[in-house]
Amino acid sequence: MSAAYIELHASSAFSFLEGASLPEKFIGACAEYSMPAMALLDRDGVYGAPRFHLAAKKAGIQAHIGAEVTSTTGVRYPLLAETREGYQNLCRLLTCMKLRAPKGKGAVTEDEIRVYSRGLVCLTGGEQGPLTAAIRNKTGDETLNRLIHTFGRENIYVELQRHYNREQEAINQQAIALAKSFQLPLLATNGVRYALPQERKILDVFTCIRNHRTLETAGRLLSKNSDCYLKTPDQMARLFHDLPEAIANTITLSSRLRYTMKDLGYEFPKYPVGENETMASFLRKRTE
Image 1 (cartoon, rainbow, N blue to C red):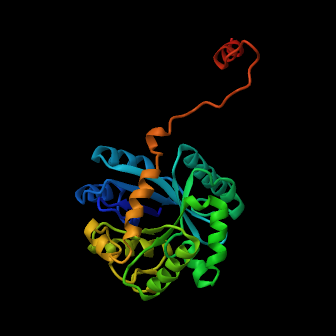
Image 2: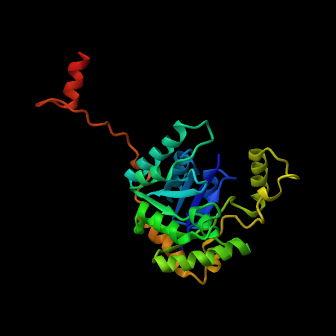
Image 3: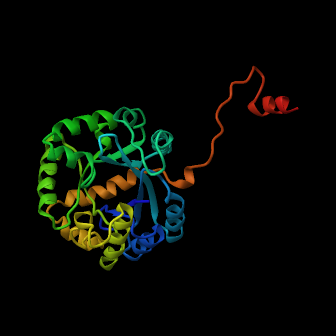
């Protein structure tokens, strides 16, 4: 099971984290760094959301919920639930995927994403996101137009990550130009996969297990460096010193994400009953 997290720094900045550590550990680090909020995005599921929500509640941190949803085109859409309807639509997307594929497999179509897009905020993603793939294929304009049509302009954030990688930064510069052209907000994220640099070894082991390889034969499946750790607010501010708006927009986005797991509560479906009847009275009669 792979998970991603987004951290919100007190001085503002989101970060993605992908699961070599448990939700509680990242929440602990979030609290230590005085970050007011963090988001969890499991890959193709919401597996860790309850533990993440409870840990964040105990620490006094705002917990945002979402998922990285894999599409039939092979890209992963980072989707955040802004409202209760958004969380419901996210679950519907995941259900569509799981009902027609074996465990651990499956993808959703672009049409399904469009149908269940209300209440969701879409980030353009990191290395495996829709915009990075489009930039490599020289179809960035087309992809952003499609995302805007699907989610609405106000629900798209152009995501930037920096891990001392020349190819990544070259893509970033093209993404920045596209964001300016389309008048879309930038969002600084961190692609974090472990809480501390030394934990990169644990992620490498998990990667080998998932791909049935040994550390000696995994090659490019493993991370290029150990930079994908949870950074402090000051570190993120320095990393994106040339793009302060990308840092500031993390606060803006967090303030929009109103849904939390405490709003989940079950709601019985409305059943059509006759005149002068309530659902309770109708059920009582049927039961008797």
